[in-house]
Image (cartoon, rainbow, N blue to C red; front, side, top):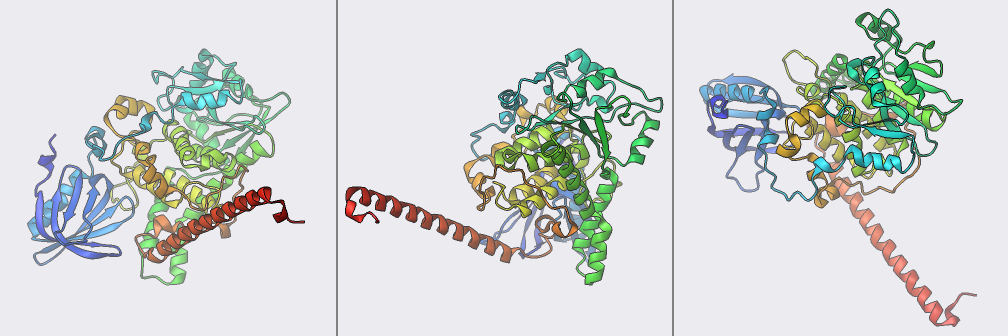
Length: 549
């Protein structure tokens, strides 16, 4: 298929662009295969380059011969284009709708994008399982890296290499995979260096109504326990949901077959509920007409903050079991690719200071989301504005980022990255020129040849100038475990995502720049103090009379 077939009117002059907090711009609108571009000949006006894949929905309005297209984006921005001529407006709208809903991944912009920057570090090779295993090997000899899934035949959604207990062979893993949803057998998620406890993740056990048993599965997870120790199974479903799953062949671990494990149910809502919650939240944020009572009621009705609290509470529980109880943990829900990953990754941010660095957080996203099989293509194909019926879309990753922001806000000096890094990841998960978030699992990325045909987001992020922009000026390395408050009063609406297009951030930006200036000035003064102390020490050694009594 040629993109030209979908573009009925490639160019229109005299188009007026309206954007939040920016002056109105008149110029020429151009449609390409991947971008909507508005260019003006006026000096000092910023051009609009909008990826078609970032467009969630459009609305058309007409007044006489003038047409308007309201473009609602996946990053929650809303822009308006005034287009002279009804035919031109209809043609542009029709083309945008066609180009923004292409099904074929190979037609996406990352396959056509050529970077304008020098790729110093290939992000596709930055966070390989082999490298993570070397770090694990330096801490313990109880685990091994298995390539049982090298051809994706055991588990379609896992990466080719996974860490498993050393005493468990590949044949056992294959048997366990038949007992777990989607073949997602228990694998290592995190090793706690402080006490040797571990966190694993998996899909639900397929016990069914007959109470099916798998001794290989019991052997695998028991292999992670120290003598005399018990473990915790954290099921991210309500008890009744887990029981109902038995009728469909799923279920949960019975206490009779797993006597050394205590099962805890912590209900985290599933995809369709989360998507509805996002839609309600964004609708509330965009409604400028309501009173305080109406705003608070709408915010509460969205249940977004409740979901944030549930996820953070469960992550804190997992971290507490590992760090304070000295117990190993297995986390799973149904598939083990949504709420499970929210919990395991947030628990690591609480426990592991390395995950709070820019590189460490990239590594976490790579390990616990991309290589662990979170279906980004399904979950992020629509945002909050799309009028088409939701299929499997859900803001699972956005909720995770929101939870990270909550912890960052409570511990502003413990994170090397700033809020801008989290916003950047949200934007690129939904629409990007990079191939990092394309596909639903490692098998998809291999099939699409993404490392060979696209550029990694990490190649862009890890450039020096970008790292400087994303670095938190307040950062001071903190080797301690950090325990966030999950009290309702401690959890705030993430304005940097949900309100950034609704009110100007000028004052906040100016305050941030002033803070950076003060920090830099403080560093200069500290350096001068240190220099003067060294000079004084030097003088005292040269002239004993200067030494204090």
